Amino acid sequence: MAQAWTKSDWRNKPRVQMPDYLDSDALGAVEAQLAKYPPLVFAGEARKLKSSLAAVSRGEAFLLQGGDCAESFAEFSADTIRDTFKVMLQMAMVLTYGAKVPVVKVGRMAGQFAKPRSAPTEVKDGVELPSYRGDIINELDFTPEARIPNASKMLQAYTQAAASLNLLRAFSTGGYADVHQVHAWTLGFTEGEKAAKYREMANNISAALDFMKAAGVTQETAHTLQSVDFYVSHEALLLEYEEALCRIDSTSGLPVAGSGHMIWIGDRTRQPDGAHVEFARGVQNPIGLKCGPTTTPEDLKVLMNKLNPENEAGRLTLIARFGAGNVGEHLPRLIKTVKEEGANVVWTCDPMHGNTIKSSTGYKTRPFESVLREVREFFAIHASESTIPGGVHFEMTGKDVTECTGGVRAVTDEDLSDRYHTACDPRLNASQSLELAFLVSEELSSLREARERAAG
Ligand code: PEP
Ligand code: CO
Figure 1 (cartoon, rainbow, N blue to C red):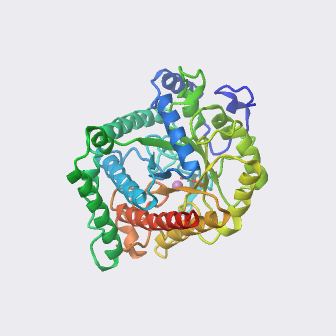
Figure 2 (figure 1 turned 90 degrees about the vertical axis):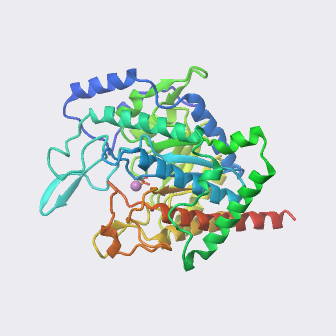
Figure 3 (figure 1 turned 30 degrees about the horizontal axis):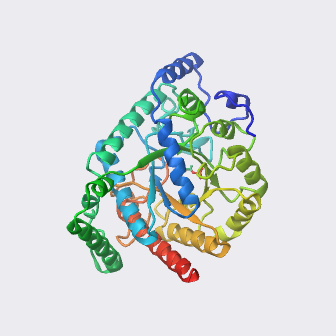
């Protein structure tokens, strides 16, 4: 049985990666304010996502999670939200085509503001300052004032998250998500010699949609095709914000994180006895847990028992992030632990965080080939273990940025300086994101064919 829990119990546990606010009165005032505001998501939505993730855990759906590494106040605009939303819907369509199962769409959006850092300080030209920790905490400018944690930024983050969700909900149901519009591929990405195979798949998808249109869809199916379920998620790092937005679900009488549908625990904050695990274990939402090269089977076992004591399907998503070339060394022992425990989990692959390198031109980047390679290794290992590769988790944007290298519309080391806009880690641009979706779709389709052959 789960132990008793209150939303402030994390305060008695060791905390890492969280700011020390100097002005505790100001912090208290912000927390009191947020506690009075409406939650950003409704408990019923989190429950619905959980049941969709349960389907993912059984191989009956596929999870696509994606968005910014760090959402920014400066880059906040309707266009940015629309473009990421649109590319995610296009990717989902491509993935559905390969997997022949529904795709559960979860943005790293409307709350992805707080960042764990590998070092507490940053040195530039001999000057050392505290690290940037995301717009909800401090500022990116390299000045001592900008790097002071300021609690009032939580209110701005809440407002931006509320406005983002409002627009996402409008896009999801107001006609924008109509499949017949989404398939108007952006970016001329499928043009050009190298993109011939993508063009073919895109044409097949278009033909299937045209057929449905010509066949005349019923009122009911028309509605299904015009609206989507789109969820939001973020790393639950800043626990003052999370606690202040925690609410009691009036249906079940149980606590829910009101800050987003799904929250996850990062690779640096997953200490089994730490503050972040303590907070996450008590809320009803679907929970993600990053698993990296330092995740031990012993820790994973304790974490699964703490985070999902009832072994509820859809509750826990394990987000594997080992780096290309390292999956074979780490994933099998964690899969073994999951099997031994008989745990219900969703396995998903984050091929971003283990593949960050410094380019020859000095930018933090991720080569497209490494990202793809990690995804393929993840799929191959699940195939040999007869377990289910449930999804992918990308840092991406709908904008035409130059932050990751490679792809058919190749970004080179020299190109990185053109449109390098991320406040934190490098993101796949729209074209690279779609290309990956096509490649993952191929993997899913061969997996499905192999399963069908095996079933006779
Ligand atoms: C992230 O998802 O942005 C992140 C910091 O990941 P991780 O905790 O896996 O390093
Ligand atoms: Co990141």
